[in-house]
Length: 119
Image (tube, rainbow, N blue to C red):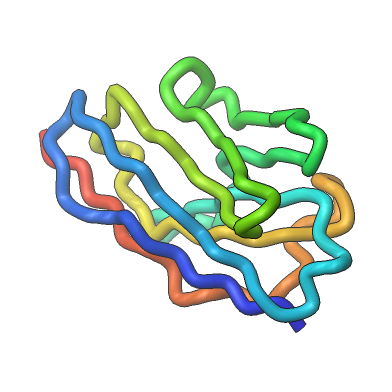
């Protein structure tokens, strides 16, 4: 099994920035892709950004140009740099992993980290 621990959320004003981190541990040999999801109140969880071990990235249209995903393969950690935040970015952010981007989410969900953007 893979364990995921997210951190870095908080309260920020619109236009501000936050950097999220997620450390993976456990049976990580199966991990190629890592990604960030978010779930706003009353909405379904959605994939925000993903990255493969080779550095190929994929972003939701709503965050393109504002969010940047990166990873440290040695530390099994994925990051999400969020700039120009908007109130509609408010959500609980979760990370997950998988053998490929298409086969995510593969692991059990962590506790997530709350991001709140005030207008």
